[in-house]
Amino acid sequence: MLAISSLPQLTQATAELTRVVEATDERGRVSLIAIPAERPLTVYLDKRELVTLMTMGGNPEALVLGYLRNQRLIRALDEIKAIQVDWEVSAAAVTTRHGVARLAERTAQRVVTTGCGQGTVFGGLMDEVDQIALPAEASLRQSALYRIIDAIRVQPSIYKQAGSVHGCALFSAAGELLYFVEDVGRHNAVDAIAGKMWLDGVEGGDKIFYTTGRLTSEMVIKGAQMGIPILLSRSGTTEMGHQVAQQLGMSLIARCTGRHFLLLTHPQRLVFELDEAGTPTTPALAPL
Image 1 (tube, helix red, strand yellow):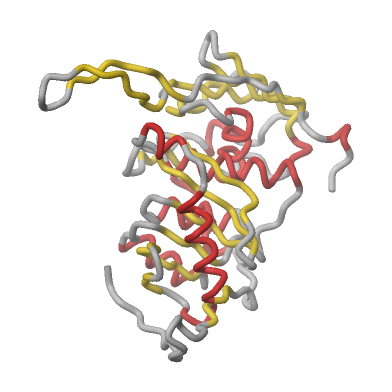
Image 2: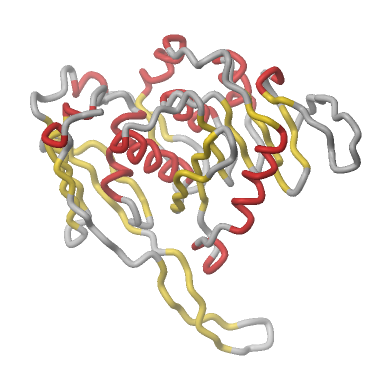
Protein backbone atom coordinates (compact mmCIF):
# COMPACT_ATOMS: atom_id res chain seq x y z
CA MET A 1 0.00 0.00 0.00
CA LEU A 2 1.35 3.40 -0.98
CA ALA A 3 1.85 6.09 1.63
CA ILE A 4 -0.79 8.82 1.52
CA SER A 5 1.86 11.32 0.40
CA SER A 6 2.60 9.16 -2.67
CA LEU A 7 -1.00 9.04 -3.89
CA PRO A 8 -1.88 11.45 -6.71
CA GLN A 9 -3.83 14.57 -5.89
CA LEU A 10 -7.29 14.19 -7.40
CA THR A 11 -10.09 16.63 -7.97
CA GLN A 12 -13.54 15.38 -7.08
CA ALA A 13 -15.27 16.61 -10.23
CA THR A 14 -18.99 15.96 -10.42
CA ALA A 15 -21.44 16.04 -13.31
CA GLU A 16 -25.11 15.30 -13.87
CA LEU A 17 -25.43 11.71 -15.08
CA THR A 18 -28.79 12.11 -16.86
CA ARG A 19 -30.71 14.73 -18.79
CA VAL A 20 -34.49 15.12 -19.05
CA VAL A 21 -35.88 15.51 -22.57
CA GLU A 22 -39.29 15.49 -24.23
CA ALA A 23 -40.40 12.39 -26.10
CA THR A 24 -43.49 11.72 -28.20
CA ASP A 25 -44.85 8.19 -28.34
CA GLU A 26 -46.69 6.31 -31.10
CA ARG A 27 -50.01 7.90 -30.00
CA GLY A 28 -48.68 11.43 -30.12
CA ARG A 29 -48.44 11.72 -26.32
CA VAL A 30 -45.65 13.92 -25.01
CA SER A 31 -43.78 12.97 -21.84
CA LEU A 32 -40.49 13.68 -20.12
CA ILE A 33 -37.88 10.92 -20.07
CA ALA A 34 -34.35 10.62 -18.69
CA ILE A 35 -31.43 9.92 -21.03
CA PRO A 36 -27.76 9.38 -20.07
CA ALA A 37 -25.43 12.35 -20.24
CA GLU A 38 -22.55 12.18 -22.71
CA ARG A 39 -19.70 14.67 -22.72
CA PRO A 40 -16.15 14.83 -24.05
CA LEU A 41 -13.18 14.68 -21.69
CA THR A 42 -9.86 15.52 -23.33
CA VAL A 43 -6.91 14.07 -21.45
CA TYR A 44 -3.63 15.98 -21.36
CA LEU A 45 -0.58 14.11 -20.12
CA ASP A 46 2.11 16.56 -19.01
CA LYS A 47 0.47 19.20 -21.26
CA ARG A 48 0.45 16.88 -24.28
CA GLU A 49 -3.01 16.14 -25.68
CA LEU A 50 -3.49 12.39 -25.48
CA VAL A 51 -7.07 11.36 -26.22
CA THR A 52 -10.66 12.54 -25.97
CA LEU A 53 -12.94 10.16 -24.10
CA MET A 54 -16.73 10.33 -24.46
CA THR A 55 -18.16 9.70 -21.00
CA MET A 56 -21.13 10.25 -18.71
CA GLY A 57 -18.67 11.86 -16.32
CA GLY A 58 -19.51 9.97 -13.17
CA ASN A 59 -15.97 8.87 -12.33
CA PRO A 60 -13.65 11.11 -14.37
CA GLU A 61 -10.49 10.88 -12.25
CA ALA A 62 -10.74 7.09 -11.90
CA LEU A 63 -11.51 6.84 -15.63
CA VAL A 64 -8.37 8.77 -16.58
CA LEU A 65 -6.23 6.85 -14.11
CA GLY A 66 -7.50 3.49 -15.33
CA TYR A 67 -7.05 4.51 -18.97
CA LEU A 68 -3.40 5.40 -18.36
CA ARG A 69 -2.89 2.13 -16.48
CA ASN A 70 -4.55 -0.07 -19.08
CA GLN A 71 -2.60 1.60 -21.89
CA ARG A 72 0.58 0.96 -19.88
CA LEU A 73 1.59 4.58 -20.22
CA ILE A 74 1.89 4.76 -16.42
CA ARG A 75 3.28 1.71 -14.64
CA ALA A 76 3.13 2.83 -10.98
CA LEU A 77 0.63 4.97 -9.11
CA ASP A 78 3.32 7.12 -7.50
CA GLU A 79 4.45 8.27 -10.97
CA ILE A 80 1.41 10.55 -11.06
CA LYS A 81 1.46 13.81 -9.14
CA ALA A 82 -2.08 15.01 -9.86
CA ILE A 83 -5.17 14.58 -12.01
CA GLN A 84 -7.26 17.75 -12.33
CA VAL A 85 -10.64 17.54 -14.07
CA ASP A 86 -12.37 20.77 -15.15
CA TRP A 87 -15.78 20.26 -16.75
CA GLU A 88 -15.97 23.93 -17.79
CA VAL A 89 -13.32 23.18 -20.43
CA SER A 90 -14.02 19.42 -20.63
CA ALA A 91 -10.41 18.56 -19.84
CA ALA A 92 -8.36 16.40 -17.51
CA ALA A 93 -4.81 17.53 -16.84
CA VAL A 94 -2.47 14.76 -15.69
CA THR A 95 0.84 15.80 -14.17
CA THR A 96 3.55 13.19 -13.63
CA ARG A 97 6.48 13.49 -11.25
CA HIS A 98 9.24 12.74 -13.76
CA GLY A 99 7.61 12.67 -17.20
CA VAL A 100 6.81 9.65 -19.41
CA ALA A 101 9.68 8.17 -21.41
CA ARG A 102 9.19 8.00 -25.20
CA LEU A 103 5.65 9.36 -24.92
CA ALA A 104 5.45 10.58 -28.53
CA GLU A 105 6.75 7.27 -29.88
CA ARG A 106 4.49 5.15 -27.70
CA THR A 107 1.35 7.08 -28.65
CA ALA A 108 2.09 7.52 -32.35
CA GLN A 109 -0.06 4.59 -33.53
CA ARG A 110 -3.69 4.56 -32.42
CA VAL A 111 -6.27 1.85 -33.02
CA VAL A 112 -9.93 2.86 -32.85
CA THR A 113 -11.84 -0.06 -31.38
CA THR A 114 -15.39 -1.12 -32.13
CA GLY A 115 -18.43 -0.77 -29.92
CA CYS A 116 -20.43 1.83 -28.07
CA GLY A 117 -18.57 5.13 -27.71
CA GLN A 118 -15.62 3.79 -29.69
CA GLY A 119 -12.49 3.23 -27.65
CA THR A 120 -8.91 3.98 -28.55
CA VAL A 121 -5.89 1.84 -27.78
CA PHE A 122 -2.30 2.41 -28.73
CA GLY A 123 -0.99 -0.08 -31.27
CA GLY A 124 1.96 -1.38 -29.28
CA LEU A 125 -0.31 -2.67 -26.52
CA MET A 126 -0.94 -5.96 -28.34
CA ASP A 127 2.78 -6.62 -28.34
CA GLU A 128 2.78 -6.83 -24.55
CA VAL A 129 0.04 -9.46 -24.18
CA ASP A 130 2.53 -12.32 -23.95
CA GLN A 131 4.12 -10.70 -20.88
CA ILE A 132 0.92 -11.03 -18.83
CA ALA A 133 0.71 -13.99 -16.44
CA LEU A 134 -2.62 -14.73 -14.78
CA PRO A 135 -2.78 -16.90 -11.62
CA ALA A 136 -3.26 -20.51 -12.67
CA GLU A 137 -5.13 -21.51 -9.49
CA ALA A 138 -7.90 -18.88 -9.68
CA SER A 139 -11.39 -20.36 -9.98
CA LEU A 140 -15.09 -19.56 -9.62
CA ARG A 141 -17.79 -21.77 -8.14
CA GLN A 142 -21.03 -22.12 -10.05
CA SER A 143 -23.03 -20.91 -7.04
CA ALA A 144 -20.89 -17.75 -6.86
CA LEU A 145 -21.49 -17.17 -10.57
CA TYR A 146 -25.23 -17.22 -9.91
CA ARG A 147 -24.79 -14.81 -6.97
CA ILE A 148 -23.01 -12.41 -9.32
CA ILE A 149 -25.79 -12.61 -11.91
CA ASP A 150 -28.41 -12.01 -9.20
CA ALA A 151 -26.45 -9.08 -7.74
CA ILE A 152 -26.32 -7.37 -11.14
CA ARG A 153 -30.04 -7.99 -11.65
CA VAL A 154 -31.01 -6.08 -8.49
CA GLN A 155 -28.28 -3.42 -8.66
CA PRO A 156 -29.69 0.16 -8.90
CA SER A 157 -28.46 1.62 -12.17
CA ILE A 158 -28.68 4.43 -14.69
CA TYR A 159 -29.57 1.74 -17.26
CA LYS A 160 -32.82 0.95 -15.45
CA GLN A 161 -33.64 4.67 -15.30
CA ALA A 162 -32.49 5.84 -18.71
CA GLY A 163 -31.03 2.95 -20.74
CA SER A 164 -28.30 3.46 -23.35
CA VAL A 165 -25.32 2.74 -21.09
CA HIS A 166 -23.04 -0.17 -20.26
CA GLY A 167 -22.22 -1.39 -16.77
CA CYS A 168 -19.10 -3.10 -15.47
CA ALA A 169 -18.52 -4.56 -12.02
CA LEU A 170 -15.80 -6.18 -9.97
CA PHE A 171 -16.64 -9.06 -7.63
CA SER A 172 -14.79 -11.22 -5.16
CA ALA A 173 -14.55 -14.92 -6.00
CA ALA A 174 -17.34 -15.48 -3.46
CA GLY A 175 -19.67 -13.18 -5.42
CA GLU A 176 -19.40 -10.03 -3.28
CA LEU A 177 -19.85 -6.79 -5.26
CA LEU A 178 -16.82 -4.51 -4.86
CA TYR A 179 -17.26 -1.86 -7.57
CA PHE A 180 -20.01 -1.01 -10.05
CA VAL A 181 -19.53 1.62 -12.77
CA GLU A 182 -21.70 2.66 -15.72
CA ASP A 183 -20.71 4.75 -18.73
CA VAL A 184 -21.63 5.29 -22.37
CA GLY A 185 -18.93 2.81 -23.40
CA ARG A 186 -17.95 -0.41 -21.67
CA HIS A 187 -14.27 0.43 -22.19
CA ASN A 188 -14.75 3.59 -20.08
CA ALA A 189 -16.46 1.62 -17.32
CA VAL A 190 -13.66 -0.95 -17.15
CA ASP A 191 -11.03 1.80 -17.11
CA ALA A 192 -12.81 3.52 -14.21
CA ILE A 193 -12.81 0.25 -12.26
CA ALA A 194 -9.09 -0.19 -13.03
CA GLY A 195 -8.49 3.30 -11.63
CA LYS A 196 -10.46 2.56 -8.47
CA MET A 197 -8.57 -0.70 -7.95
CA TRP A 198 -5.24 1.11 -8.34
CA LEU A 199 -6.16 3.83 -5.87
CA ASP A 200 -7.45 1.31 -3.32
CA GLY A 201 -4.57 -1.15 -3.75
CA VAL A 202 -6.91 -3.95 -4.88
CA GLU A 203 -5.31 -6.84 -6.78
CA GLY A 204 -7.19 -8.66 -9.54
CA GLY A 205 -5.85 -12.22 -9.25
CA ASP A 206 -8.72 -13.46 -7.07
CA LYS A 207 -11.44 -11.26 -8.57
CA ILE A 208 -14.20 -11.69 -11.15
CA PHE A 209 -15.04 -9.04 -13.74
CA TYR A 210 -18.56 -8.60 -15.16
CA THR A 211 -19.72 -6.49 -18.10
CA THR A 212 -23.06 -5.99 -19.79
CA GLY A 213 -21.24 -5.55 -23.12
CA ARG A 214 -19.30 -7.79 -25.46
CA LEU A 215 -15.94 -9.25 -24.50
CA THR A 216 -13.93 -7.85 -27.38
CA SER A 217 -10.16 -8.13 -27.61
CA GLU A 218 -9.90 -4.69 -26.00
CA MET A 219 -11.97 -5.77 -23.01
CA VAL A 220 -10.05 -9.04 -22.62
CA ILE A 221 -6.70 -7.27 -22.76
CA LYS A 222 -7.82 -4.66 -20.23
CA GLY A 223 -9.06 -7.40 -17.90
CA ALA A 224 -5.70 -9.10 -18.22
CA GLN A 225 -3.86 -5.82 -17.55
CA MET A 226 -5.84 -5.67 -14.29
CA GLY A 227 -4.72 -9.23 -13.48
CA ILE A 228 -8.26 -10.65 -13.58
CA PRO A 229 -8.45 -14.31 -14.73
CA ILE A 230 -12.24 -14.71 -15.17
CA LEU A 231 -14.49 -12.41 -17.21
CA LEU A 232 -18.29 -12.62 -17.38
CA SER A 233 -20.63 -11.01 -19.88
CA ARG A 234 -24.36 -10.65 -20.30
CA SER A 235 -23.56 -10.56 -24.02
CA GLY A 236 -21.00 -12.58 -25.99
CA THR A 237 -17.45 -12.39 -27.25
CA THR A 238 -15.65 -11.81 -30.52
CA GLU A 239 -13.21 -14.06 -32.37
CA MET A 240 -10.19 -12.03 -31.30
CA GLY A 241 -11.47 -11.71 -27.73
CA HIS A 242 -11.79 -15.49 -27.63
CA GLN A 243 -8.35 -15.98 -29.15
CA VAL A 244 -6.61 -13.62 -26.70
CA ALA A 245 -8.37 -15.23 -23.72
CA GLN A 246 -7.24 -18.68 -24.84
CA GLN A 247 -3.70 -17.39 -25.16
CA LEU A 248 -3.74 -15.79 -21.70
CA GLY A 249 -5.33 -18.68 -19.81
CA MET A 250 -8.40 -16.55 -19.07
CA SER A 251 -11.92 -17.93 -18.69
CA LEU A 252 -14.66 -16.16 -20.64
CA ILE A 253 -18.22 -16.89 -19.55
CA ALA A 254 -20.86 -15.37 -21.86
CA ARG A 255 -24.67 -15.07 -22.05
CA CYS A 256 -24.92 -14.83 -18.27
CA THR A 257 -28.66 -14.43 -17.67
CA GLY A 258 -30.77 -16.18 -15.07
CA ARG A 259 -29.25 -19.64 -14.63
CA HIS A 260 -27.94 -19.81 -18.18
CA PHE A 261 -24.33 -19.24 -19.24
CA LEU A 262 -21.85 -20.38 -21.89
CA LEU A 263 -18.33 -21.22 -20.72
CA LEU A 264 -16.11 -20.51 -23.72
CA THR A 265 -12.47 -20.78 -22.65
CA HIS A 266 -10.41 -22.59 -20.01
CA PRO A 267 -13.25 -24.57 -18.36
CA GLN A 268 -10.95 -25.74 -15.55
CA ARG A 269 -11.47 -22.39 -13.82
CA LEU A 270 -15.20 -22.99 -13.22
CA VAL A 271 -16.17 -25.38 -10.41
CA PHE A 272 -19.44 -27.01 -11.46
CA GLU A 273 -21.94 -27.86 -8.72
CA LEU A 274 -25.34 -29.47 -8.44
CA ASP A 275 -28.16 -27.66 -10.18
CA GLU A 276 -31.46 -26.77 -8.53
CA ALA A 277 -32.85 -30.25 -9.28
CA GLY A 278 -29.88 -31.91 -7.56
CA THR A 279 -28.45 -33.17 -10.85
CA PRO A 280 -24.68 -32.92 -11.44
CA THR A 281 -23.93 -30.39 -14.13
CA THR A 282 -21.32 -30.99 -16.79
CA PRO A 283 -19.26 -28.38 -18.61
CA ALA A 284 -20.29 -27.76 -22.19
CA LEU A 285 -18.38 -25.39 -24.42
CA ALA A 286 -20.65 -23.86 -27.03
CA PRO A 287 -19.97 -21.33 -29.77
CA LEU A 288 -21.81 -18.01 -29.75
